[in-house]
Image (cartoon, rainbow over all chains, first blue to last red; front, side):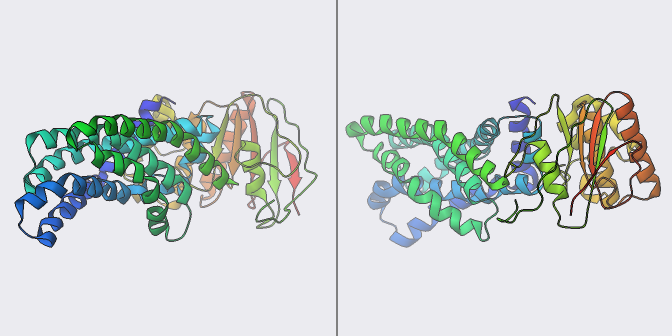
Amino acid sequence: MPIGGIVLRDLRRAWAGGGALWPVAFFLLTAILFPFAVGPDGALLARIGGGVIWAAALLAALLPVERLVAPDVEAGVIDQYAVREVPLALVAFAKIVAHWLGFAPPLMLAAVVAAGLFDLSAVTLGRVELGLLIGTPGLAALGVATAALVAGLRGSGAVAGLVMLPLAVPLLIFGAGSLDGAAGAGAVKLLAAVSLLLTAGAPWIAAAAIRSGMD
Amino acid sequence: MRGGRMLFAGVSVALGAGDAALVSGPNGVGKSSLIRIAAGLLRPAAGAVTRDGAVALLGEAHALDPELPLARALGFWIGGRAGAAMAAVGLAPLATVPVRVLSTGQRRRAGLARVVGADAPIWLLDEPANGLDADGVTQVEALIAAHRAAGGIAIVATHQPVALPGAVRVTLH
């Protein structure tokens, strides 16, 4: 079974019924709440805007986690992959790719709108977009690993947040850190390192979690 | 083992080309677990499973995307063989119907169609007759017989009568 087929299936399922729009809508809503909460101080909003966009992106990536792995375990799809001897790490990697394709590009488009709400400069917006491009694969990987860990638990949505958000803190620190002008270059490299580590490690963790859930 | 409880022990079966095994026993005795062990999905507490050849599994769940038309849902797993497989289980007229509106028996047949189309020598069928009408059961028996005649192997776990001439009987208790 080719990996492309698994990616396309997961992507199609994410989009079916408009499900892939929820994270983007949630992201924009979170971003819109901040100007209401802190008041119409343009300078303050421009200063916190980049960080708010990162925090909102993190929460938006968490939203579809419950639908990434658990439905496939329940429907027997994972069993069918396993009897076809498709490595579960490859299945997890395909899910990461599909999750990333499903939420990151729309999120990066929505970040342009959010940047307008915060009156961010074009340079800052460019840094935000670069950071999101580098950091979102790590977020997607973390999302799939979390989804595999909590699949089958009751109230898995709340547990998923508790598992995933602390592990995403390095992405948040280096992502928001990459926005500070000259000092940001080092943060971009660290962001890339963390994202790469998560993307490379998550398929194995997810595969082990799914496998142990079968017993 | 399930939930730390030993379900069965001392089961030993060897099957060659054209052979079949019929696993029977009351509910909860571990028929499905035996099928999952044979499929390599569960680790046995002791002992080993060796097999030579690809496996096709009919499990409890149908593993077909409910929102897709049957032909496309099957096509994800068996590609171009979906048409012939649907015809073999009598589902050809339902090819364009979404999986979510199929009845229990029709979903069971769809699961069988995936097994038929999988092109695998070893069939592991967990309760293949569940939800099927009398014609359906006859059809399953004929499909298994044809598969065995072509040199295939079938292990069937069932609590309903399924005719498997010359099958090894494995009774769990």
